[in-house]
Each structure stands twice: as C-alpha cells, then as structure tokens.
Amino acid sequence: MATMKDVAIKANVSVITVSRVINEPERVKESTRLKILQIMKELNFQQNHTAKALVTNKTRTIHLFNPKFIDSSEPYTMKLIAGISFELSRNHYSFLLRHEWSFPHKCDGIIAMGLREGEEELVLEKMKEPTVLFGRSHHLDWVNIDDVRGAYEMVHYLISQGHRKIGMITIRDSQLFPEERLKGYKLALGQHQINFDPDLIRYASMSEASGYEMGYELIQKSDVTAIFCMNDLLAIGALRAARDLHKKVPDDLSIGGYDGVGLEFFAEPPLTTMVQPVYEMGRALAKLLLKRIEHPEKEQEFVVFQPKLKSGKSVQRRI
Image: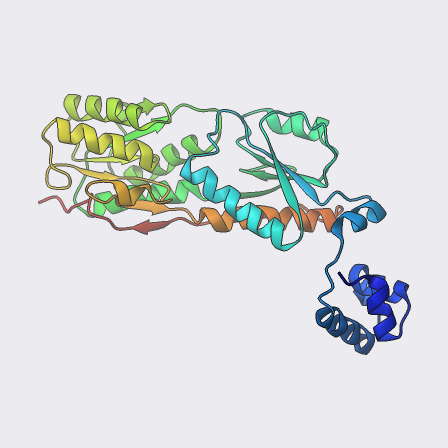
C-alpha cells in the first residue's frame, strides 16, 4: 500500500506538503494540490484514518443514543439509522449504538434520538461533546418533521373526501410528536368548523395489536366514517379490526396512516399515508453534527422536513 512518503517522492515535495493536502488543503497552492491528488489516485493511496486520529486527537466515532423503548429493528428507526450511517461513512466516520446515557468510550459527537421531556437538560449537563437532537431543542442543533402540518394534511384530506366524523388513534408519550399530531388533527377539524369530540380519540401503545384493540373499540362504539392513525403500524391494526367487524375499507370506513416507511405496502388495502423522508432526515442529522464538530462556536441550526400525502386504497369519498 502506498504511503505519504511514496506520494511525496513521486511529486517531488515534502511529506509535510502531502499531509497538508490531506488535513489543510487551503494552505497548499492549487497546482501543487491537484498534482498531489492525481499522484494519490495513480498510487491508489488510502489515507490511514486511525493514524490521523492519533495525531488530531479525534476518534472519528459518533455515539448514536437510541433509548431501549425505541426498537432499533422497527422499519422507521432502521431507515433513520441507515441515513445516518451513510452520511457518516462517506465522511470516514463510524458510529456506536448506545441505549443508555453512559458513554465509556471517547467519541467526537453524539446524535440523540427519542429524548423525553426534561432529558435535554440532562444532555446539556452531562455531555461535553457536540450533540445533535432528533426532535426539537431550545439549545442544541436539531432535525425534525413538521408533525402538526402532516397530521393537518391527512385530516384535511379526509374531510375533503366528505368525512366529518373522524376518529383518531394515537399514543400517550412524553415525546413531542404524538402531541403535535393531535394538534394537527384538531387544527384541521377547527378550520372546517367541525367540533372536536374527545370520545373519538383512542390511546394505544406502539403496536399493531394495540391498533387493533383501539380500532375495534372505536368502530364498535361510535359512528366514525374515517380514522386517522398516528402511524402505519396502528393503522394496520385498525384495518384488521374493521375486517373482523365486517366493515369494508374503504367502502364503509376510510383509514389514513402516517410514516410511509414501507408498511403501507403490506396493508390490505394499501394504506393512504403521510410519508416522512426518514432516510434524508438521518443524513441531515449526520451532516449537522459533522458541521458542529468542525465549527463548535457556530449559531444553533435546525432542519424541518415536510411529510407528503401518498394515496393508497384505504380512503374513499363518502357518498
């Protein structure tokens, strides 16, 4: 394998100049830099990132905090982590998945997912490394989806299809997103002069079985013509409940989901859902963190993504 010395000899420059091309390219004259880069390519020079880490005191490792209550094998989380992994890898970083706020190994930065109310203060108090949050933050850089807008769009769409008795299956959680999706649901009702009825809200746990249970109860005990489920897993459970109650979807009942990470294709009928660009959100988290590592004193930065409505076959105009 070619070394920096090999590159330096062929380019007729010092090893220090080759090192600067790698670490401080702005300090090298452009013609010299381009010549050295071409020779690196010819010699198939591979930078030794471990050696560089020893010199720069950087580990090129990121810790990804994913609490135990979030299933890492769940499609949404897998897609998010895939986006993070891609962006880190292309910048020669690796990551370690952590489930608790204890980081025995040194790292260059932290990506935090699934923080609950009050935990941001814990992060600020304990963590000295640059940190980016998946969610909203008053102090840290963050990436999130516009959940109020997403829920509003789905319920607005159901109303545009003639539905006015619209139930919702959500979850109780100290994270912000269930509250924001409920807010979007209420906002859409209010803008169409439909009174909010708390009896049409059901609180489930994050499982298909709980979606079935709450869907069954909502369909059986009310005259809803449509149900908005705060994620696709709950919507699949509600679809199964409708079948068991001999309600045809979408002829007798319309059901809308949220997430769009692939589960909608396995539903019968295929779900109408709000698609989140989860992979791109993962990449954005990694990009923000790498920027923070390079510029620790920069102003707080955040990125908000917009979900998009994807029509399936689970919603139909009410006649």
